[in-house]
Length: 123
View 1 (tube, one colour):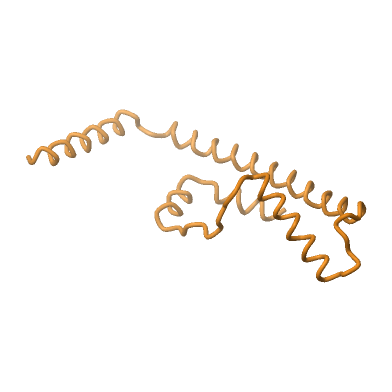
View 2 (cartoon, helix red, strand yellow):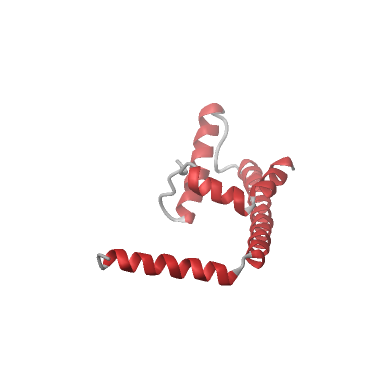
């Protein structure tokens, strides 16, 4: 499962910051409800199968079961990967947070806040 290993390597704060600053936006449109999107995906696969294989029929329990088993396995794997990546991300962020010098950070925030207020007031 090299894909998971590669993602775990990218779940580092520095990599995320670099992506947020220089990355690209997702081109995938997520329109509709989760339920609707899932139903649409089943419709798409059955339409494609019925076009490629005219004898295929979405009412066939065997075919439907095979597709359902396939999608359940993928859902379970991606859920598990998402949880593992989320936990690793949390651990990495927590580790970075612990290494921050909070007094210096607060001082920097205060300086910027006061500078912004002075600029707003025309000083």
